[in-house]
Amino acid sequence: MPDELQLALAREALRCAARTLAEHAEVLAVEMEAGTLLDRGGPEALRLFAYVVRATGLDGNAAVGHA
Image (cartoon, rainbow, N blue to C red; front, side, top):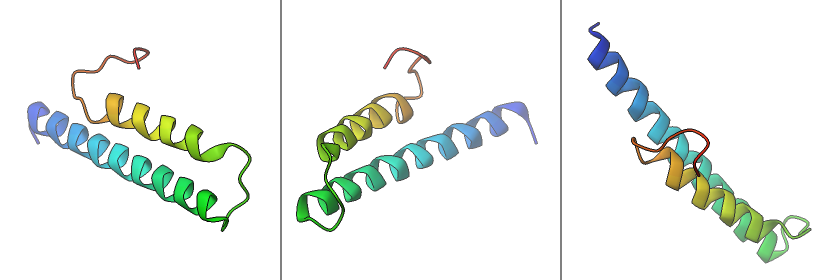
């Protein structure tokens, strides 16, 4: 498989993983707000995490360490 194709596939896999992580963080935040899970200040932290994952994981040009 050509290097360019491998790189494109890897980038798409990372974008998919970032979307999945962000979605899971949002679901956990909602569950905490609903009282299903114990809330220890987590919903806002999870939303911040989801934002950072989206900002750095969905942008193919984002540099590591520059959230």
